[in-house]
Image (cartoon, rainbow, N blue to C red; front, side):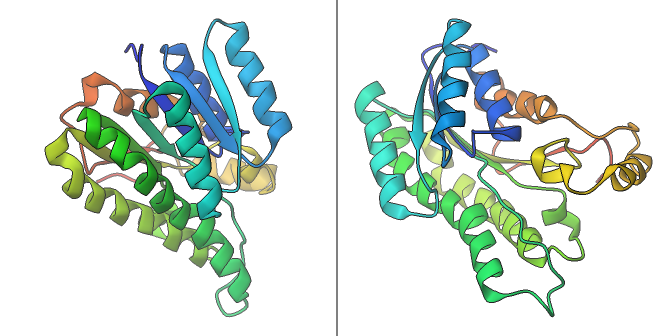
Length: 247
């Protein structure tokens, strides 16, 4: 699945799933703009991609800040002439039972996980419409499909991403722009490290494949949806969960 000549913009790229997506897209010969708040980690990722012959640039930004999003995406389009692929991966958790959840924690999760996707989609759309080609991929979650106690904010944000995906797919489909979501299950990342080994072992017992997933598992699905091979897939939620949720 060659992505030669394509330009990708990946949010939340400094670690975990976002980092794996950036590496996978670069390995398929896409030019990758990696976006996150941590400039040091982004520079390390750019150097890693460059060392293997790929091309990448770092965009240090807060995805909840509309002006920073506008400025960064405008700069990438100015440098490379376009953005073909957008991966909305940036996400945080602020877990608490809903009766105790602070409004600030609700707002932070919705702004980072959902509103940022809207902001980025809005800014790349003109470039994609001009060339009549685009791939928008939103990283949702199994918990946006089945819910999770203690994660009302996170589950709501990821369910919102799925709805956003379908709406955008309908809006932009006639211009050869697809919009899909990838819904990971339990993936081994910094976000799941805090859950503890016992929790992860119990989680693995619920998964038909018998293991927790890796960021690379998700990145492979993203690379497929970004490719020409997925040109007739839009408005779809691709589950990458080892069989945890079926149907």
